Image (cartoon, rainbow, N blue to C red; front, top):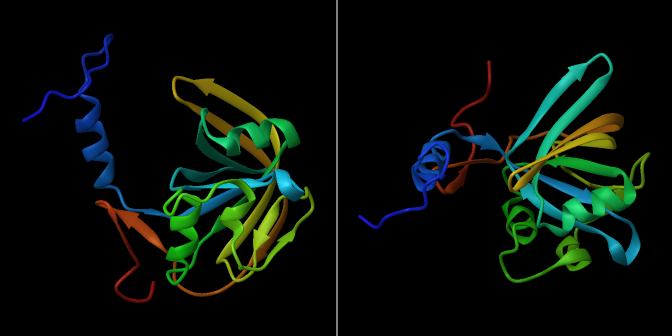
Length: 173
């Protein structure tokens, strides 16, 4: 076994933590930010509701990502929850294929919501947020966004776990 990086303070094996987190399947979303030629986005699984009163979402972004820089510049982001047939969108925004910035949007149909961030037509949900607060810690920023608009679609959610995409085997009760 190859030695993996350890946190100097806790001594925790970073690769072991990555392997542990891969056992936790999560919905796949694309976070979009920016406008015009200065738009970008990233594929994430670290999304959750934070509060219903007022409606607030949280998402974690890598601080070295162009998406985090666009969120800082424009003060908005849209969480696009993907359907199980939108894996190609997830791959593009994850950087597979080498596309960057506005080129990740491809031929899909995108429309601005209340903040100006783009929502993917046909996504399970698009949750448009105004950046309320960001906490920068270590490699990531935890964003809190006040919900400005929501669009809802239909279908099954695209999930990611154990290094691969999937969906629920059957309908939810």
